[in-house]
Image (cartoon, helix red, strand yellow):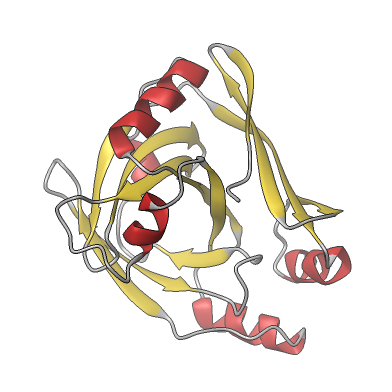
Length: 204
């Protein structure tokens, strides 16, 4: 089974990003943890149903040159940079992508420690182009949304791409329910929040 797992909302400063999301939604995100070696750290807000918003930002306690954290630090405008799909078999996803002539990278092992001291470990699979979602297998780890603040839900998520037919083909093959439209590459999410409907734009 494959389903949208989380949206990666990129910001240049985590505390400011958390405050921004709180002001938009009325729900305050909580600190998640650091990603050693990537130069990033995050905060989380649950959508319920094993889905969440990840606010990701540079980690000032890490060495940033050459990392994702350095990239985020250079970009002042926040927005949705990527999205993740939860699966139980990354190898099967890679094979399905290959049948559609979509290349992939090596499967990556990841880990972080929550503020409560809980060790999380998971695996990621990235396809050849950042327009595609990345895929995550949480293995035995508890899902991060379970410990994140609730009150918001994901009402709509739309992917805009110059290759809508190919994108839809992969989504259908993996049975992922997401709206795909033709256009410049980007993502737009609509959240239902205590303050009403809120749209989160794409990161450019």
